[in-house]
Each structure stands twice: as structure tokens, then as C-alpha cells.
Amino acid sequence: MIPAWMPLGAVFWIVVSGVAFVLAGLGIVSGVLDVLAARLLALMFFIFSLVVLLPLIFVAPRNHISWGANIYNLSAVASAWIMAEWLEAHGRAGLRGNRFEGDSITAGNTIA
Image (tube, rainbow, N blue to C red; front, side, top):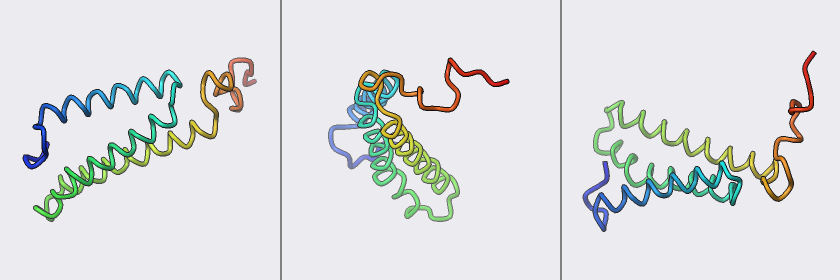
């Protein structure tokens, strides 16, 4: 799915994107630069949509798979961006303690 015109070859981009996914996941889960990791993940999804998926719509505008892939990828962009905003609003783990302590249901609260 990697365009032939991209420099450095397909294997390079597969490895780079795989490493980026792993680092973004580790950053978000561990809380180390989690907001930046989520925003960079959204940016990576968006660039992927622009470079790889958007041209497919122009090549075959009646192909529903091209449209579906773009919508699916843009929803991933939105999801990553929403996560980044949520992480920023609820604080970062390690800097302000437990990021979930402001939520309505925590370990100390019970629902009767």
C-alpha cells in the first residue's frame, strides 16, 4: 500500500511507521509525553491519509473501498486527537498524581 514514488523504499516506511506506533502506544500508556505522543499519532494518521489514501479516491472515485478507507483513517485521526485533548485536560501521570482522581467514579467511591 506504500506508493512506489516514495523515497527509501517500502521496507523503510513499514519499519518507521511500526516503530512510531509502538512509541506512541508506550508514551500514551506510560504517561511519558502522552499528549505529544497522541498528537503525533494523529498527525501520522493524517499524513497517511493524505499521501496514501486520498489519491485512491481520485484514481477510482466510484470505488467504495477507497472512500471507506479514508473515512476509517480520518476517524482514527479524530480519535487520537480527542485522546490527546482528554489527556491534556486530565493531567499527566507522574506530574500531577493519578490522572483519574478527578473522575466521578474512582477506587474509593462506591455506587449504592
